[in-house]
Length: 265
Image (cartoon, helix red, strand yellow):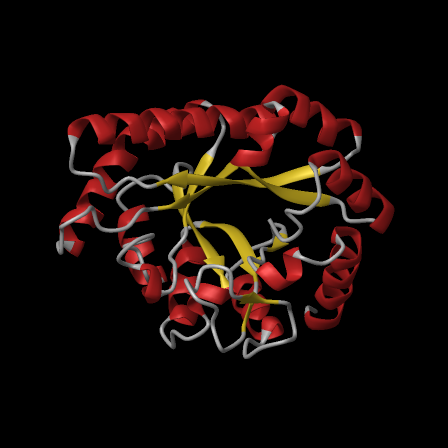
């Protein structure tokens, strides 16, 4: 998503040329290219797929909508398995239209995980609940903190459900380091992502993630937290930014790789 202006073949070529060994993929471009074709493309290039994003949006009240969401998440699990990644990132979903019931929405997520967790495990895939910054709670994700994400995840085996730690969403939360330790003690840190916090936020706030090093987040500090908690997996960079997307994709990927080296241990 950081360089969504690149097609999948262009992304694979750029990663190979820059020595980037792994990539987190998003479902929409994978589906457009073809899941099996995308799997072959990355496999032939020697790239590892770290995660697939995204499943989730599990808060609907309407029974038909809930059934459709569960079916879509099963397809997402199938796609993750085909791509060779063991991690499907979940963005849980916001409040249904007209609802003000945050607790009820979170319970519906738990109900869905009870169905999806065993299915994911059968396919060798883990579900990684990603808490999003509270500004997204109404329309995108009622899970706003790592504590809330872990409260949900801990109802299920760690081999089925864990969490995603994204610096953009948790950097402000002074309880997050303790929650990272809590997650690590249970082997529930399934993904770790970097993005910086820059202001002012754009209209709509979704596409305002800053390039590493441009904002307020100490990337080494957060890397230290997850590594102290026992995390040894990939570190992804996930930037949603209209200004960055307007640039040449290969140049942006090269810059992001340089920033990654500069701002991580």
